[in-house]
Image 1 (tube, helix red, strand yellow):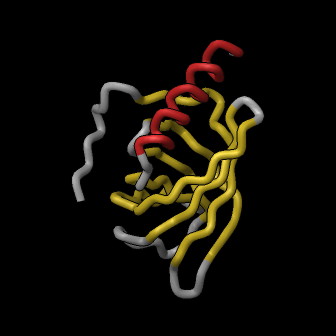
Image 2 (image 1 turned 180 degrees about the horizontal axis):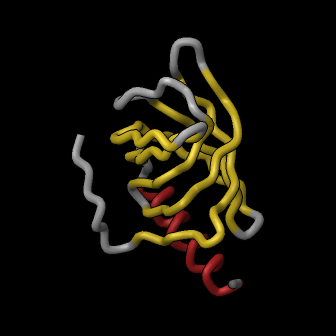
Length: 112
């Protein structure tokens, strides 16, 4: 698993962007999350405390400019912060999904 924090295009949300997740853990967990930053190949999220491990898979659902997006990712790092966890996810996105993310982020930035 290759993790590149300094990608050319990474957008930091201020305030964070709400979303939902389904973690493919044993037992599976789901809930709300906050997206702290996003690129076409990764994101940093804040999620409720759970025993997440590096390599756990997650499906993330969120909206940008009224467009519902569903992305699949894998946890590459975990940082415990009291009752919450910050996690870095490597996204498994197709080339079409990457183009859609970039265009949606551009529209999001223009609306701010």
